[in-house]
Image 1 (cartoon, rainbow, N blue to C red):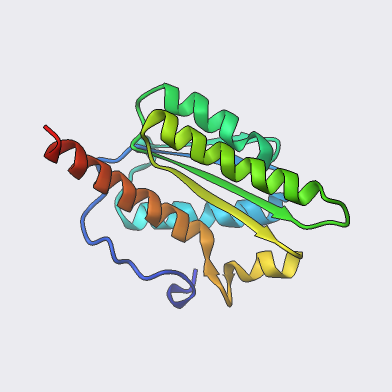
Image 2: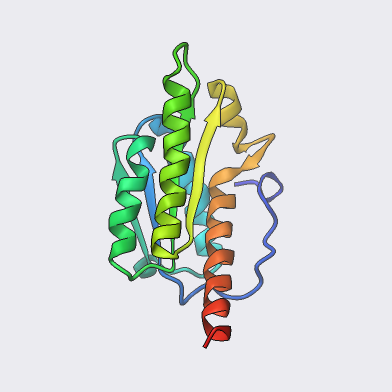
Length: 163
């Protein structure tokens, strides 16, 4: 991955102690696999080991919150990243899926008081999605992983200061 195509590394601490799960939609697989590759690269560069990561696939973006909810209920993850790609078609289906996916992911985060990251592309066409996985718009998989690391660190800090 070209470093200038993603968000710079602003989190300077090691994330080696964090346990992070990634849920990946199989729908639009060529795009979601590239999202996953970017997320994994970010986690590796921030020292999150393979043993502290779990990748789970689900059929589509609509199912991401359901899987994230099951993972959150395990109470062993510092953050969960949801990766998907919803590309607008000719029917209102796009609106329903994107709205409910976003709502569902946020619901899981709030219900479990856990960072559950929205790494779902919602684009008008495939080119816009490609632009967001290492093209002109950076790499949203990388960005989602960095957000997970930063939020996991923030939640640990807030937990310590609330005691």
